[in-house]
Length: 336
Image (cartoon, rainbow, N blue to C red; front, top):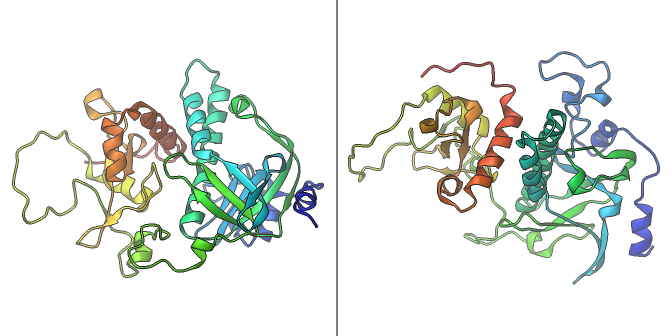
């Protein structure tokens, strides 16, 4: 069959359940059977915590993403013509973040934009990690009333049919600067098939616990708790009180990954994973010292959050990220 014929054959004709397809892809659906509070769900296939997501899975299981059939293209590659998917979900998430905090818009649209931004960011992270770990990606192909980018937030797309592609897809590109991705059906990128040489800057990144299996994964530090180097000189500075409990909660929430770029923190000489805690609304501006206002980010993103030309956009993104996580923390109190 020609690639054009294969593309046509990927058009789904049945409206299969998302949960069934996720399970067919080898991803655990046990969490679908309960609510976030642990109560049984009467109809797991309609569990709103999962059934509307755009990406599923983990680094252990592999990732599964939902892609509209109309967004698939034929592209000439060195190995021949292939079916590809080229998108930018990081940019989509940022646009939805802006809509989510625009108080001139109806609250229903802002809440929808916030949920869609969370799904877009999860989709972006799934492809980013798949590229860095050289992992195959499974794809659910969708057909129906697809909303355009400018319509998202105001409305949701409607799926009429979906199917699980039997072929593996492979990430051929992930642009760290822009977020652009190139996902290719059935063609392994040759450069990631071979083990990278030691010290190769293009090698797939490892999480801190992969790089050091003996590392205590529960131990995370930030700029206030990391041991000072022995050569550091003493200095007197003015620091506003920051709750150690808040910082610890945020570091544990991040789990060693920057909450902005999803890159792993580095491993310190003491064996801890280092990220920096950052108040999105500064304490000096009466921002709360609470996990709903604090993120754990890498040193590079921390500097960007303070000094980059796009720092306002970064604040918007961080606010949206915290909004998606804040509901579970809003009723907790933290002692200093």
